[in-house]
Image: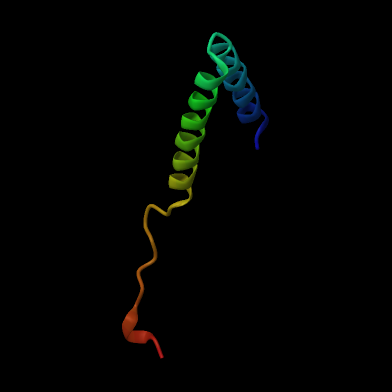
Length: 61
């Protein structure tokens, strides 16, 4: 991970920590769970090719 990206990640982590500091433990846990689901879904979508390779079934043996 690039240094700039790592720095931005640390900023986001600190902001989330401040944001959840006023929540109950249960609210914070639910919020972080939703955030994790969102982050996972977005990271998975980044791994998907924009132009998947076309399968040529005619050349299969």
